[in-house]
Image (cartoon, helix red, strand yellow):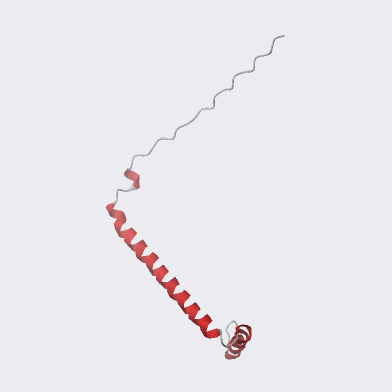
Length: 87
């Protein structure tokens, strides 16, 4: 249970051929292959960037030693009281 037998795969393939047609299947496979190659190269590039950043991080000054700015507290000002109008 849970695994697909050969008959399941044949039915799935027949449905794809019926939906997309035999002429468009090779083009669809080519574009899927291109997409997977691009995805693979992007993932490897991201891994290389992360490795480069990890090796460059010890050369930088740690954030704990940097001076931290003190937060500025703004006190709300009281609004002036309205003067009663005299007649």
